[in-house]
Amino acid sequence: MHTNESGIMRFVLNRPEKRNAINFDLIEAFSRCLDECEKGEVKMLLLTGAGTDSFCSGGDLSAFHGLKTEEESYGMLRKMGDVLVRLAFLPIPTLALVNGTAVGGGCEIAAACDLRIAADDVKMGFVQGRLGISTGWGGGTLLHERISSPRAMELLMTGTIKSAETLYDYGFINALVSSAHRLEDHPIVTSMEEKSIGTLKAYKQQLLDRWDKAVLMENIEREIRRCSKLWASDDHHQAVERFLNKK
Image 1 (tube, rainbow, N blue to C red):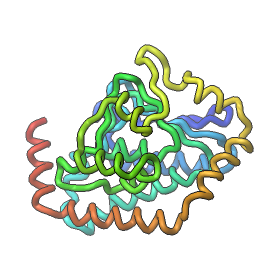
Image 2: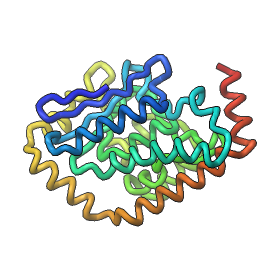
Image 3: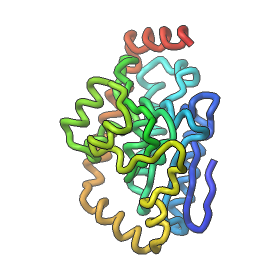
Image 4: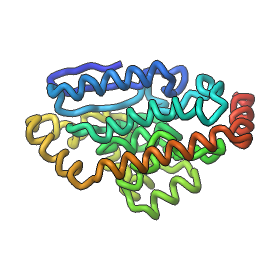
């Protein structure tokens, strides 16, 4: 679900009954939102989750568990990977308003955004390793661009769920907001809304100029390929079965 008001695009991951998990329909909706953002009439993108409990719980295992082989999983991973590449390279600033728990692919989406503003009581974690896989949408690669590599490796390799305060200390979250207040009312957001589209694009381009797009995209492709191999493993399929049987 996305709306464009006065050049401010708001995209809501709107599957609260599934903790805003990503399925193929949501991937397509995300892609359509980015199509509009690329038209030149949008000056910033705000991304959040529906409700107050979840930002995004990652991939919808009930939708993707039928993908068994490396080739089948690669198709899905590549689709969402393309979305995150487009999100990261948008010529306008992108902000993740982390309104609730973000795990797995939800953290990858947040990592693809330029800035992250979070409710002070949320929890976040790159928990993919618990399911016998690695990050597979490019979020691991992008995490290394957002914070120091030692911190990124800690978050990725341990799969530990961290508090918003800890991730603020790590530099992953830019600002914390009391859960009693709206994230989009934070001064970072309101101050940016006051700036012209030209100013915001100029500063975003400074970031993009630091990146070697070809190298970054190659690294993301490698990340996706590694995950697709792990996806086809017995370890992953058994972990997903255990997870689904617990629900």
